Image 1: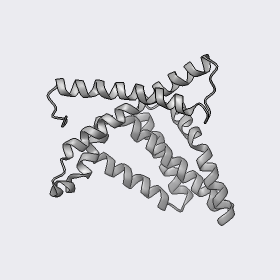
Image 2: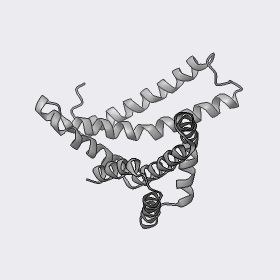
Image 3: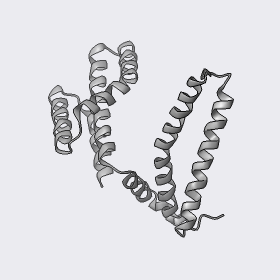
Length: 185
């Protein structure tokens, strides 16, 4: 239900055409951040991370339309990025997986096991921070050894990263087997 509200809210932002309504949405985002105890500095850092995309969109809209419309689109993108950040900070991996499972319920008519989809999404989303950490550890190790991260060395770096990922996958598989999951081995 929260996911549907979030999608409707984010979609609504793109249909706003008055500055007053955009101000109301901005205040709603601030209120949500205060109520949910989300740090403003972290939210600003998230928006700064998306700034190149937003600026590119502004530039394209300036060329296609006019600068007023381009600025309106930029404000809408910033508000949607902020709303998405709020949603991501208040939703767990399990919650996202459960939402995707619920969205896939019509697939049950085709004999698709939605519990397996939920599990796969949960594992996949849980692996992302691990992959990120592994990549940065590998990058730091390469830099410490004086190995540059470029196309020429990508085969070595990707091989080491994939070996690390396969070790993690084997650990997850063993853990699932010990917990009684039938994973089709």
